[in-house]
Length: 68
Image (cartoon, rainbow, N blue to C red):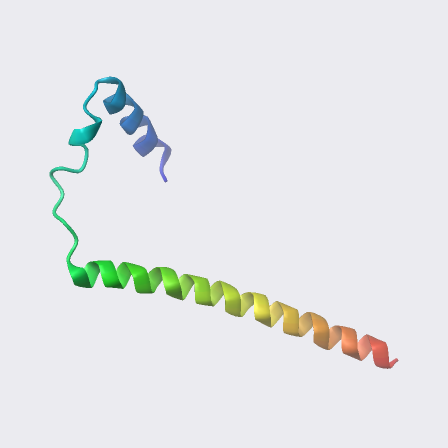
């Protein structure tokens, strides 16, 4: 989150107008909500894949060193 966003929220909260933030924005469509969910899920899957790749490389190296 950008620092400027947090600073703006603090300023607006001190003015007592925090409930006005975001009123001018339109609601997300079902498709946009689903797309955001799928993007978050994809990021998680990519992180899991990368962890598994590193683990596989580590254990492959360990098994080679154990044979010598």
